[in-house]
Image (cartoon, rainbow, N blue to C red; front, side):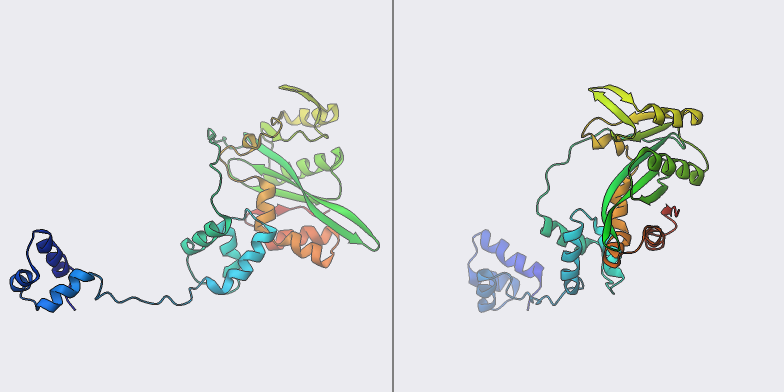
Length: 279
């Protein structure tokens, strides 16, 4: 087998108009060798049959995760398969996810901005199925408060989205953060916003009364404007809770009570990233 440089020289001399005999004489090669490599330059290349990759045994588990969390990031999924024994890299996982999900739509561009320490918190909530109590089931919600500069996240599970539950969550988060923000950003939840016409907003008086002693300015996002809550400080909080914690799926499968749900969320999500309140 000859090297790549010699194969290149064979084809270069052929392109210059030399015959096979002349090329063989010039390069001190046998004429059949010249003819062989002119016909197939990759003749000497050893093709390796790829064996099963490190990721392949985890395809079924990854597909199962994607059914529950279609938008879960490669980093989050790698955390899951690492616990199953995966010791491969992140790039091959990203390639697999890209192939599974197909081509994504071009994301909308936003102007990134950063908050100063203590300037802004984001208040959000999400629905997490139901908990069963005997013959009765009650909806389960998770309220979250994200401190935008540090990305510290406080979360609290609840069966209600009323103003008392919202104010309790906010107060507990302020105690946890050790202070209050200047601004509080949230959706147009009915416990905070009574009416909205374009940019004209009428806030709930009880909500304003609650915020007044803390000198906090409320800010309601535009309808359908998720970008106002992104501000360059990371993903929306409830998306993090959904994709980065097994608390929800574990709780719904076992039917634990609300207090246990909060404890499970704290234990599985990790104390470094979350603070979960237990009544």
